[in-house]
Image (cartoon, rainbow, N blue to C red; front, side, top):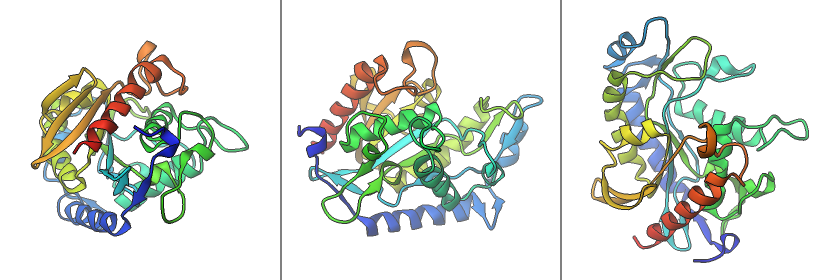
Length: 292
């Protein structure tokens, strides 16, 4: 396999525009239409929340405008799957509480967490949260910019066209499009009803995105994803292949970047979990992806 910074990345902008249009049509018909959350399971999920918990509905997926790529000649479409959207902080937080469109989510992830933040706070820019720091590390490994915390290393220079930020090159798809939990907190406390009902939307989203590599963040996410991404061939406890709509998908199972103890990997790229688990697993995932 080429050294990380020798990898050749190209982008198919029309393919991504078409893919985003298809997902937008699904959202408009089944989830969020003219600012109204129209999911048929909404009330059932809301009523299932634990007593006293708040409920935030309808946080759509982020899809980067350079989602469709090839790396060293092999198609590469990266989807990172979290549990649900955390509670937004800061002066613009009200925009992201509920009924968040794909476009708004894109702006939140790329411009908010990506371009307006740094790995650590520096030069007047705030630092990212552990979740997005870990996601940054994973994307740097997959896209060949090398491990590090430098801002320049977050940009990819394709074979043609202008450079782009890592966060414009992946999809962030939460397993749950709604979140429930104690008011004012970021810790989700979803119910089994929510997980079951949202499986339909998760499946539809992945069918449209057709990812080639999926990163599952957290043990609950890994459990709840198996209905759609059932292991077809296990390689390690962190890596397996699944079949989705007749297509092979390489799936990576990791802890959440903000997990506690020795499985935490959202604080620094030199964390043991990064060097011993994340990096070798993603290298193996790229090798499998290139064999498709």
